[in-house]
Image 1 (cartoon, rainbow, N blue to C red):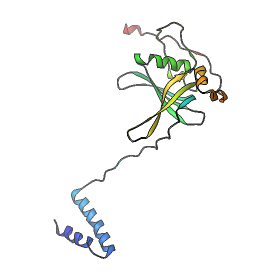
Image 2 (image 1 turned 30 degrees about the vertical axis):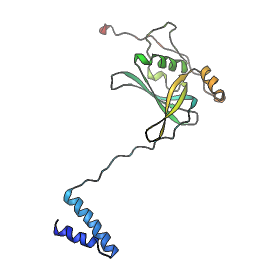
Image 3 (image 1 turned 180 degrees about the vertical axis):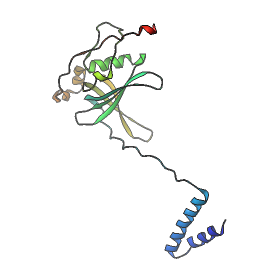
Image 4 (image 1 turned 90 degrees about the vertical axis):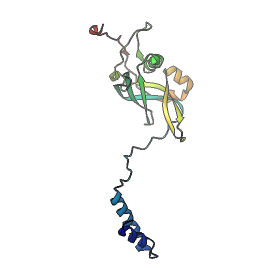
Length: 190
């Protein structure tokens, strides 16, 4: 131990409280400088929003963006707004196992699909902005007991009203009819 450290240790034990505090602080700075220890640091995130109670809601799609997942699957990432102004994220991932969910989403948004079964349909994110859908929200607790809200199901208006008749009191504007087009195939890929 250096002489400087020995002096600071001795001063830190001084019965004079001010001298001891100054010596302890000097000792900390001297040790930190000598060994170049960086204090741990991090960047803060915005506060987690409070959970939305479990239930059936009407929501307006306020943003929708087409993205590609890490597994190279097409996605539409959306922000949905409830009548009270709360928002919740929802993502549609276009994989074969999501066929039922994506069809339920289209029915919930009153998008007109081809009547035939198993028709590949294009769903551009741009047609979703300002459309209304009916959703089930559930909450999951993490290992620390913190709740997070998730959209777990899309419902038609009729299904939603059966489960939550109070939704009939919420006025939503009439949605324009949008017919979804069959997907076009790129002849260069055939």
